[in-house]
Length: 228
Picture 1 (cartoon, rainbow, N blue to C red):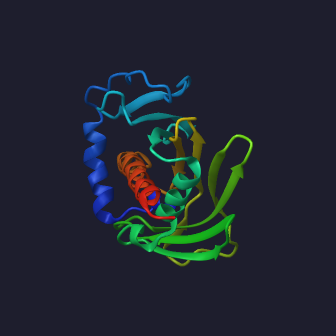
Picture 2 (picture 1 turned 30 degrees about the vertical axis):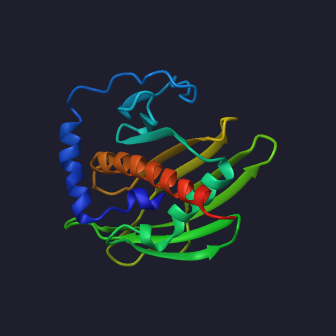
Picture 3 (picture 1 turned 90 degrees about the horizontal axis):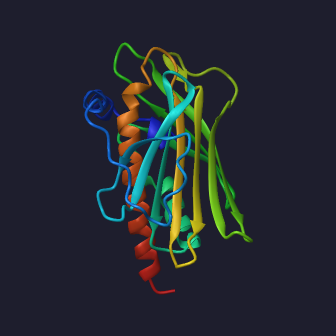
């Protein structure tokens, strides 16, 4: 989602140092936990240090050498319906809009949200814009809640000095564990186009994935504790 991609000047240049540090020794394989999925086709990028871990982060090549897909899988201490309310709040509430991002909700219903976002990039790079369509679905038989987000073409030409992001594809899935918890999976892939290297946003994106998981965990816990 563009909350991952649309980064401020400060965060983007933190990403440069994150990229350099990523050459250090990789993480150890996660401790066994019932919710840790089959990771065939993925490379382990990071893992929570708790035992058992609360989350595991993976990566793999996506559309090309400079485009990667990331996946975080973690556990939320709430049923999927509560965790989904927490996730929706995280995705749409104004308090979570990154500094510098110009964002507008163009359309909103229970099942559909359309967002527009624009962010400045440092000279000599052009600013980026994206319009995203979010679809909220629920499989009552499996008890699974899901959000799919994808950049769409709104038509017309972007403003002068602005580049329209060619690829944003994200999904969030909340599945029941059968013991009052949810397995939370986020998949994200971005190609921000132009001459700005995608590799510079990998570190900030992964940091945001971890932060968002913790935010959803905290929000879900407060919603569970709130009187009905």
